[in-house]
Structures are given as structure tokens and as C-alpha cells.
Image 1 (tube, rainbow, N blue to C red):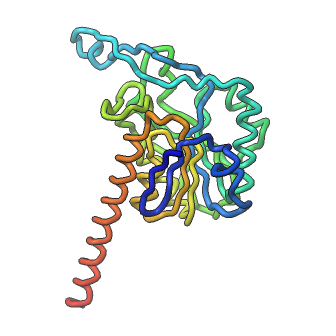
Image 2: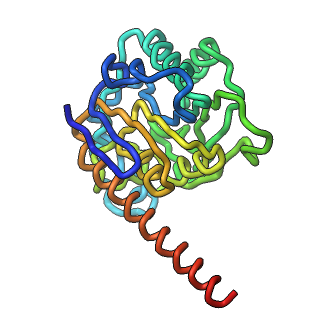
Length: 257
């Protein structure tokens, strides 16, 4: 089995429902937070997208592959209930994106009404295409008993540097989540342990490693190995640099206090 080990956690390249190493193997109530971006059952595969930035600037229009994985899942409702039930069994809190489809939102409300529905507003992701015209905002479902004022607002305004229109071509993942978005939730919830059943390009690992939070992540597609490895090592470097800064500040306060 392929794994990537960081200083604070491990990533397994297996189905998160694997009975030996997956979520079913974890004891109830042993993880603080599940934060994830599960498949939306859209089935985008080898999608072609116009470069809208060139179109707006009057330059020659090109068409580029988005390279989205095919996430069309048979019995999507049943599949969603299974992994979600495991998340609720293991974790105190669960936060995830459910996509912009009204059908998906209705399905999740039927499964369990969330404690809160947050909105990620990303003003720089407007588009006229049939794929991404609704991507200026997306809902995040929040489950669990949260302390008062954990979230300052029901809307989070975080522009993207990636996504359908602004992909980082260095990554193989079609639409990685914003590190700032994951950082926003993890810092406010303050978990000691995190799990991500669908970690994609490794943004959860990046934030957890940089903050020194223990984690377990799962990903079925080995094509994302390099992305995850890079994010794990980047998170380790950020944590190390932050530690140096804290030591210097502490030293300064002791010598000049």
C-alpha cells in the first residue's frame, strides 16, 4: 500500500471505507474534525474549457483541458450516507463542501440537517460557461456542536488562485481547494486531530503540517501523489520556519524584557 508520511500525519492511497486502514478501523469519537471536499457526482471527464481571460482581453481564444477526474458514482445517495455516517461516528465535527447543485443540497438536508450552512464567496470566479457560472459562491455544510462565535459570519470571502478559471498548472488536480479556506475553518475550530476522506491535492495535509495538527488522509487516485507529497513537505517547511520565528521572539523578550 502506498502512503505518504509527514511529521504530523499519514496519507493512505486507498478507499476511505477500507475496513483495515480506512474510517471503519477508527474508534468512535477519536477524531476532532473531518474536513473534506467529496466528489459531487458531476462526471466531468476530459472537459474542455475556454480561456475566458483571453476572451475578455481581446486576445486569441484558445481551449485548454481542465483534466477533471470522472466522479460519477453509482448510487450516489447511498454512497454519501455511508462515508458521512462514518465521519459522524468518528468525529466531533464535520465540515465539507457539497457543490452548487440544488439536487445535492436537497440530498444532504434529507440525510441530516447541518448545524450551520456557510457560504464561500469567491468573487473572482465568475464565468459564462455552463460549468462554472455558479462558482462565485459555494455552500459548506457544518455538523457538530460548535462554541458560540466559532464563525464570525455565515459568509467567507476568500478569492481563489485556482479552480476552473485560475488553475495552478503545476498541480494535476482539476480544482484544488483554497488553502486559505481550509486554514480559516481549522484555525477557528481548533481541532487537535483531523481526518480527510477525500484529500485530493493535499490541502488538508498542507494546513495540518503547517499548524502542527495530527491528521489521517485518504485518496484513491495515485495520480495526486506528487501534489500531496509537495504539500506535505511545504507544510513541514512552514511549521519549521514558524518555530524559528517564535524562538527568536521568545529570545528577544527574555533579553530585552
